Structures are given as structure tokens and as C-alpha cells.
Image 1 (tube, protein in one colour):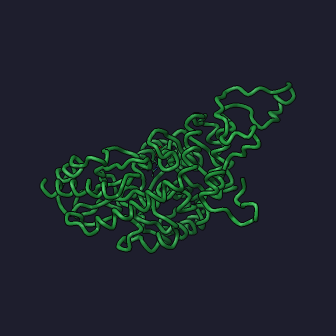
Image 2 (cartoon, rainbow, N blue to C red):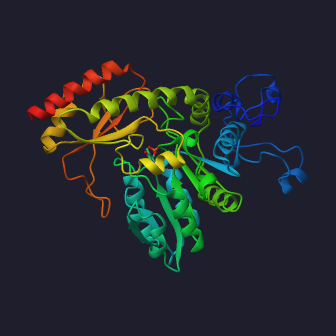
Image 3 (cartoon, rainbow, N blue to C red):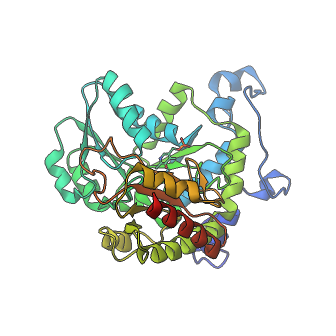
Length: 392
Ligand SMILES: *Cc1c(COP(=O)(O)O)cnc(C)c1O
């Protein structure tokens, strides 16, 4: 379907999520697209084969299943094209490889997802790309950090684990003035709460592993681009031989159908819990952009239309023993990485790799993913955690 309902007005987000990416009438009326397992695609004759003159030519180059998810993601992101890759981390590394060459310089936000930094410090360094990490609050001041060979400015807002908000329109304008491509890891917001391409970003990156998949059982990434950037992105993805398995792609498309209602619940529960935590003894700060106390709240309010279900707390004093005491007292929150699934998770965050956006001084940082459980039960669990941290 298109973005319009039959009367021409733009349909609401849940209406669109329910129908984007697949037209049942084009496939015998089945509500869902087929899960196409494919390498070989047959051609009707030698001429067609030589000219590759048909929609599908080889499994690596696209299938109806991948196209359904890519089309849905294009519509949600306002993108000219989307590539689907096997993990969220691949959704970070593939565009960096596509747009950086030996001798280039890249600016990466210091509050970036840690494996993104590891890729930059190892693979990009080995390929001869220089990287500088910049302050998430740089805003238009990023102009001063641009070099003649700066080809990519990489953003992530809010930042991983510490949730700093970046002034994306200001950064994008300065980066474009210097001739750089602007990339954004938009996993936290999903395209429901922020559409990077509408704010000057060229390439929007998602770990579809998180909210789109929604059930902690799939790894997948999407990279969506403007018309100017998509050909190079797509060509590099194919040249590297990267594609995603059809069952995983299907699971994410399935997850998209309910992502709107799931996110409503994640968002409401997370904000209620964040507000409750702000008043608790033992909590120095709550790092949640939708709280008026958050230093990036004004930017969040200006640019975003929602906050998802993951944020951090800074404990008021204590060390690793307090953090471990907190975690070990939890009975509902699981101790595990990743997020975006239906179940709540907690993790003691390590920030030793930061150079500018350094660790809060007050105490350990605990990241909370608020799942779909009942808020009262989650608060009771966090009370156990805070009591244990106080005893540690
Ligand atoms: C989880 C995550 C990724 C990587 O996703 P995977 O599918 O686990 O590889 C990338 N960016 C951010 C911000 C993430 O939280």
C-alpha cells in the first residue's frame, strides 16, 4: 500500500505498519509474503539470461521476501532504498566500508555503540582511514573538526548507554558543507520516533534485531539511504557478498506489524519507571531523554516524537560491588545484552573506551531495557535491586 488511505489523507502509523511492504493481491491473496529460499533464479531463454533482463536474477541480489522488508523500511524511513544485512553491526560496518577509502578521515561520536568503535579502531585503521571521536554535544561546532579529507560523519542519538542527544540537523549541515556523508545509527528511536533522512542524514542504520524483531530471537540490520547515496551502498553490499537469510527477514517483517503497539507499551512503561527512579534514594541520575531533567531534553522534544524503552540510571556512589549487588537481586529483569524484546533486561555498562563523553562520576551506570511486563512488578524488582546496592 501507499502512505495514503483511499481518501488521500496520510494513514496513521499503525495502519501503515499493518500493510507496508506487501500487496496480498500480487501473491494469490495471501496476507503475508512468501519466504523465498533461493540461490538460483531461472531465465526463460538465453537472451534474457545474457541481458539479465528480469526482476530477480540471483538470490544474493534480492528476493520477494527481502523486497517486502526493504519496501516497508523505505516507506518508514522516507528512503530511496534499503539494504538488508545479517546483523545490526553489519548495518554499521557496510556503509562505513562503502563510503570510506584509504587516506580518508571519519568523525565518529564518542558515545557510539562500542562494537562500532572497535570496527573503526581495528578494520578502518588497518585500511588507512583516520578516525576522530567527537563530543556528542558538538552540534554546529563539528565544523571545526572537519578536515579536507573528512568523508563520513557518524552519529548516534541518543548515545549508547549514556543517552546524550545530538543536534542532528546542525551536525548534518556542517558535515555537508565539508562534503561528508552523514550516517546515523537510529536503532534507539526506530523510524517511528525519528526519521533521520528528514533531518539531513544521508544514511539511516538500524539493528532490526531490536524493536523491529522484538522477540530476542533474530539478528538483522537495515541500512536506508537517500537517492544520491543508495547506488554506492547497494553496490558495495552486493560486491561484499552480503545478504540476509529469508527466515530472519520474514521474522522482522512479522515483527514490524506489531512494532507500533509494542513501542507504545515499552515507551509508557519506561517513562513511568524512569520518573519513579528519579525520586529514589540510591539513584544519582536517570539518563532518559524524555525526562525534563535530561540535558538533551530540549533537542529530543524538538526533533523526536517519542522515546523508546531503554535508558540508564547512575547509582549514587558505590563501585562494581554495588552494581553487581543490584543486578543479582533482580528476579524479573534478565542479565543480558541486546534489547528491544518483550522481556526486561539490565546490564552494568562499561564506559572505559570513552575519550570525551566519559563515565558519570557519581557511581556505576546500569542500563535498563523495559519490556512488556507490568510496571508494578518491574518497580518491585528495581526496589530489590536498589536495596541490595545500598547494602553492598
Ligand atoms: C544492538 C545494536 C547494534 C548491533 O545490532 P546487532 O544486531 O546486535 O549486531 C548496533 N547499534 C546499536 C545502537 C545497537 O544497540
